Length: 307
Ligand SMILES: NC(=O)c1ccc[n+]([C@@H]2O[C@H](COP(=O)([O-])OP(=O)(O)OC[C@H]3O[C@@H](n4cnc5c(N)ncnc54)[C@H](OP(=O)(O)O)[C@@H]3O)[C@@H](O)[C@H]2O)c1
Image (cartoon, rainbow, N blue to C red):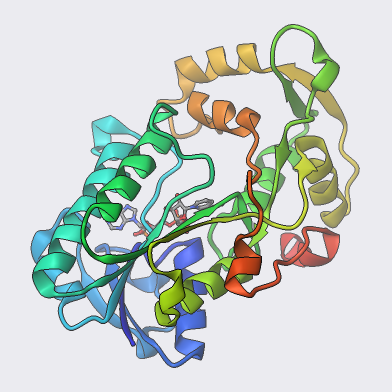
């Protein structure tokens, strides 16, 4: 199949392109000017240069495609530079839907995220609104909502390499965030890291299996792990033991509220909120429904942290 990919030069997109090519598909990537060198296998892809706000480039990318996959997402917005959740995670999806409709590309697969909701953070709201627009579009849709994704970043940033860089390699003790005033549950909130290989497999399978149409799949790894356990595993995989200290989220959020407009500040106020909400799936049967077996999170899977 010819598969238009919007946001295919990032961590997820690179793994997904590899998988699609392996299975005989041909990705057609919308690539921002300056990001051409991020396309790992240019000989096996078609490349259309342009930003997601460039209607002509979007039309060229979708022209003649059998399906479209929308992957663009950001973790922090910088409105002064035109980088917003609403623009890239809602409006970008709606524009791509409109182009898909006009070009007769009926199959649309959307990358959303676990925990999206209408009244959440701007990240969660924009992705929820994009889901709603796709469901109302009349296109043949599938939505994926992963928890945090881990796996070899191939030169990009991913969940574990980011935590290693910002927390494990830092001389400051690792923060075990806790809500309220008492550190009883410091670092106890849970996440369900899902391997990038399993995410790429799910997207690829959805392209050819009509039973995945009109379905939303939350993609969580097989374990629910506390923040503390995840940091301990990342430290062990990096050959380190890490001192950890309870950190009141209220203080960190207040600091982030002042400083998260600056890219050098490592985390935003909303990111802390979403982290502490936890990121596990209410119903963890998606991989079984897809006929796939998700990979467990552990030191054995994190060899890439030492490269
Ligand atoms: N990684 C995770 O743990 C995780 C978990 C849940 C959901 N997700 C979702 O998965 C998706 C992919 O995440 P990722 O980790 O692969 O992110 P990423 O590595 O940051 O990649 C983001 C992609 O979006 C592209 N992009 C950003 N702004 C654009 C614009 N204005 N026009 C065109 N393209 C633009 C980037 O292009 P450039 O290469 O030019 O920058 C890149 O291809 C996102 O929607 C994210 O919310 C990720």
